[in-house]
Image (cartoon, rainbow, N blue to C red):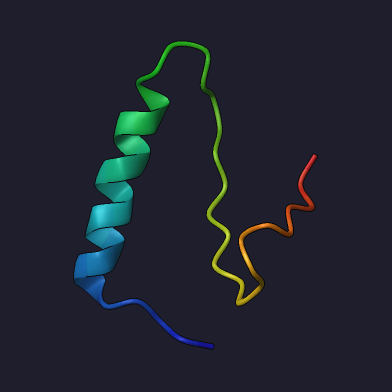
Length: 43
């Protein structure tokens, strides 16, 4: 498993704060798996 440097986590945190400010958005998921992006399994 690869770990992201702290600066990358800061970027993800800023992005997540902007996403949750959007009206109607109350949750989001980070998919940090090595699978291709087209394989979505969340419902």
